Length: 270
Image (cartoon, helix red, strand yellow):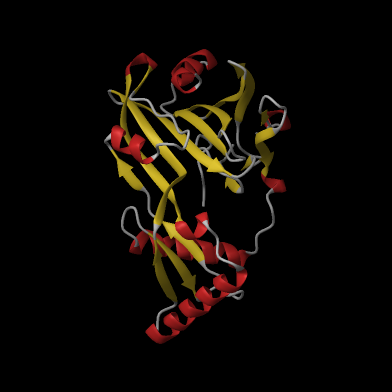
């Protein structure tokens, strides 16, 4: 699966593209205590994944896309490429065009969203993934194995090569992308939550430039790449170890300067 450079990704995902990449672009963000919150690494350092696992994950992802309705989640057991007999939890995002409704559901999670950005951009919509309850409170290994065995039997009895078990979604944010528009121009803001530092792995063939900035005491990465620009930063969640990771993208190819991108991000930096 390929991910455009401009999209914020959570720990362990891989970005690929086609065109020179220099080691100087591998940037790291730190909080005010000097602790790493976000880092960019070369794809060569991406943890090894077996081909069978990749194919199993791809298949369960395809099934979720076909079978789940918006805002629903399920535990999937797939027979092909699954020698370990494991399950995958998948969900479909919820789409919002009503910002107050989204703000109300995210209340108390330190996620700030504004109805407008500088330069005339207004909130248009947001696609939001919430954390399934079984990931919020993970089952014990024994419970997980029992669920996998139950689903395996269901698949065998149905004659299908998969089985699924619906699960509820919590109100806790997993990740989201909000779109702000001015006419036909669009700025997107991606927000993801992680339990610790997030890592983006980038294909060595990607061609872009990245510069580290400090704005209001917050470290940020300003990136220019083919087709647009991005600004990335992280924030701690009061009272816990979790982090929120933000990435603002402008992908029309206008190549906004770092000053312009910072101005657009200002409402989120207060």
